[in-house]
Image 1 (cartoon, rainbow, N blue to C red):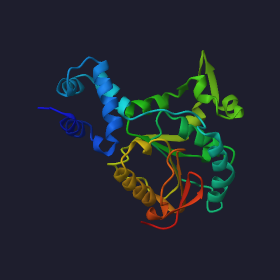
Image 2 (image 1 turned 180 degrees about the horizontal axis):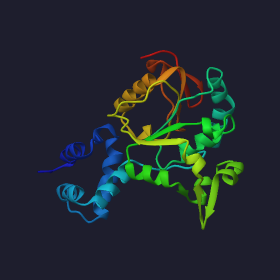
Image 3 (image 1 turned 90 degrees about the vertical axis):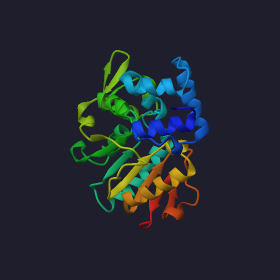
Image 4 (image 1 turned 135 degrees about the vertical axis):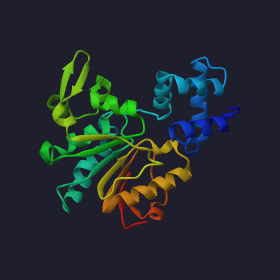
Length: 260
């Protein structure tokens, strides 16, 4: 019997592997209650039954709670720092950078990384791992069709070079798609890739509790090589980053100093 939100969280954890307790409760509960009301369910119990029996409702729920808002070159000034300062620093050690776009949403971020790296290397030498917990957004990323608004911050040369216009939309070209390996991944539960040179995880950690964020920062440290860089979002500066053996090398860019 699912009586309250605590019971609901337990049912969702058992069903999906997503622990809603790791998210800021007030924000997440408000979002879920709004969705349940919008779909005219009377309580958590009836909604969970629907999640178990209706794939459309289940997919909508997963997409809704894994907040997916993205665009190409989001916060362009930070992408300029990445290109002009961070990547050249990393490439002094190796031209074969291992790059991970974590919580990649609908693909704008990993595709942006590929296009930015094309200023340093031919596409044939670029590979980006892109992961997200939501399989539906991964499918959208693989499909690669975007509205014009999502491209507003992208350098014009990339729009012309790497997209085909299809009606009112833009489709990313296959030569860019081939550079990205999309995989399903839960930041809190799954094993992280190792020996990364650059990890990009932006605009998702703000939704997690402080305890969950601390765990993720430790895992990102373990995922990076010594000297590797973690690139976070505009509202996600790491307070006391030295606790996780990171040092700030620029606003929103943190370099691993040693293993946790």
